[in-house]
Length: 113
Length: 116
Image (cartoon, rainbow over all chains, first blue to last red; front, side, top):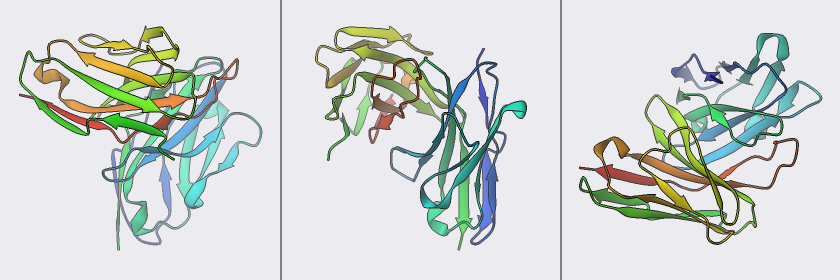
């Protein structure tokens, strides 16, 4: 079955620390990749997406992600986190031409001031 | 800009009761989706629709029905609620994607449903 793995379930960081959240998927074909963020009590919002081209994509709020096809990975990074980045982060993947997204289980990030 | 609106925001039901969750979008999107979010399990697709009058099953469709009578609305029904359906339900919509499948989904604020 197609799956998306987020190995870090909970991450706790201090402000200004660097962040990297892992995402691996099991698809063999061409994929579209997304990172969504859910702030406490809010709906999911798109952070960034990769469809094609430069494998290093930049999103909102200083986040970026790198697509490494050989590793089936799409890790999310931020050089210096802020308290306001406290949220749950979801990686999602779909096959080209197939709109249904498969989500990872999410990573809860807590940034302490 | 309303985007995707879900009603109600909270509801408590007794086992066996029925209810309908309403999702409305004002972005003229073709595709709409219903997900449930449970701790440690991420979002799982219940049903989706690729256009008015069409629906399809997702990953966890049992116990739910849906209807898309109007393009802007997507209803999720629970005919006989069970405690296992206690969850947070999210609706989403997206543009028609064509061959690429790369349109991001836009989410509503969610409905927190408790079944006693």
